[in-house]
Image (cartoon, rainbow, N blue to C red; front, side):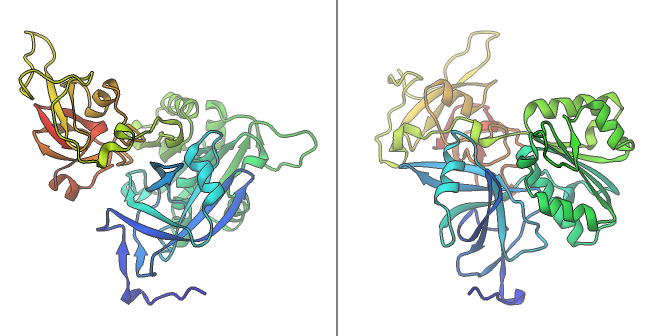
Length: 386
């Protein structure tokens, strides 16, 4: 039996902590290949504080390898005692398959605090259009649940695209929200409906014409889109065709399970390795870590010292440190490669970078010298704790 503390005695998780240990309170099957995992803070000493549509990053060890994956929070911040992520099992997806097989009530996971700008909080509007395909429904559920809980009068249309009726995530809840909500309309489209199956939703894929038919006032709406890239591309083209303002279109495009991920030096990142500057092929650099001379008109190339792994690499001024690391045969922790998830965060010890990110790092972390390797281009020689 879990007792709930009075809010006045609790502090907010997600404001100051970079990561914490969370305890799984329960696991629920949402569809044939999707589960929701609900967590509380260890000791029940905090309320969860985040914006609807944001994500958290899990740090866990699978088969002896430390891995990090980011998942959208599907629960709303209006229910702050618990935090839920909803995970679709991806064939060959190491982390999603591990979560489905091993996490149960009482399991403890290390979770990084919420990040992300894909949220209605930062884009208030009188009318919204939520467009989701597959597991892209998860951030939409957090935002929709929040609006319903707050009694919002915003006019919301949610179009949910799935392969088959069996693939609908949150099927019963979406149906209930559509039935009771005066300001929320839910439309579900199934690409394929098995013969003989009763299906109340739409049949076929969403396309530009159907989008215009279902939402004739879409030019007036703030649009949030989440799904696989072909779906996103179709939506972009459809919205542009009707003159929708691109500044009012917000996208969540990355899929972490599909992106490469490994560790520095097969586990030697935490070892005490004598430092000796090396080139991209692991050979000692003549003259140490002095800045390489660039030919006239050529893009400058700089030396990046990676102090924890004991390596140095060359990085052009026109590429990110993460790209240079991959090119050198290294595989630092990373996920989205878009400056969103924060997985590749590291400490800049010396030098300066041009960092253009998408919300994956907090201002206070920047002040502390943190950088995102996937978003940082060198302005000179660098020393990075990585």
